[in-house]
Length: 136
Image 1 (cartoon, helix red, strand yellow):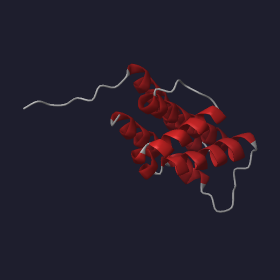
Image 2: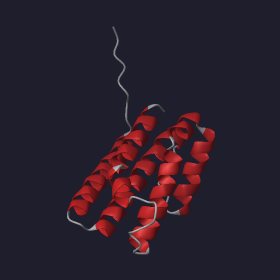
Image 3: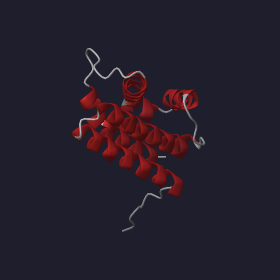
């Protein structure tokens, strides 16, 4: 019986490794009570995982800022698996609350938003992006 082994592009795997390292850093920062730094590290993990997904699925070179956002929107619109995953909402929550509000603006207490939970669940985002990238 043949066993199928998913071949992972080394660049994609390196991006996911970076994403996981940033996520682990965010947990350490959160444990130390440095929520603003934790938020930025969690966003960094999100960005790296998104870059890896974009490269794996659409062969999009690494982009920054609005370019990344535009590309993930286009991928979501064109890929039913990505759309069904809910990754777009999670990406938007993280870019707005972790990156924009908490890190840049210093607003780390947001009514109706549990930043600590959002930081802790970044690992799930990274894994979801990884699973989606393996299907491509």
